Every structure is written in structure tokens, then in C-alpha cells.
Image (cartoon, rainbow, N blue to C red; front, side):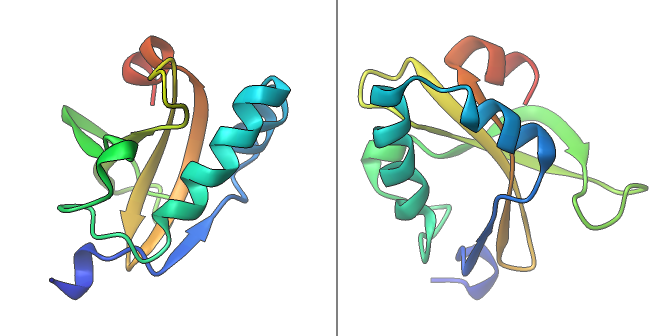
Length: 110
């Protein structure tokens, strides 16, 4: 396992993420908390299959640490029915959560 691909910390301080997370329905919220917990110490190249964690192909987003820099964006499934997803950037071992919501919405605007 490569140290730079291991999630050592999860940062949920992004206001967009917080707003979208608070708007989830109760049943989705319960599964979402479990999925977010599974990120800790996950290797992004060999994450638990339940998360369906992967980078979005050909998509770069603004870094959480340096607004002049573009970085890969990753997504993972919040629910077992694959209807709800969340996105994050991985920078220095920290997964910076960006947004969560319906699967297709997150794929389009992570």
C-alpha cells in the first residue's frame, strides 16, 4: 500500500458538503454516516467494494488547499442501492468532502 493513497483523515468542513449532508433523508443519512466512516484508513486504489470509490474520469476540481490548483475528484456511494453519492479530493492523506446527493447530480457536478 502506498502512503499517499491512504485516507488518514476525513474533513467535512466544506459548507456545500454540510448543507447537502443535512438535506439527506433520515434513511439515507444513516447509510451515509456508515459510508463516510469506511473512508478512514481506506486505500483509494483498494477501497471496500461497497463504496464503489473511484476518481471521476477526465474531471479535475479546485483543490481544497490551494484555489489555484486543480486536483482529481473521487466519488463513493453513500447507499447500498447506489442512488446517493458523495465526492471528495484527496490531498496529503486527507479526504476533503465536497458534496453529496443523487448519483447523477454528483457525477455531473462533483
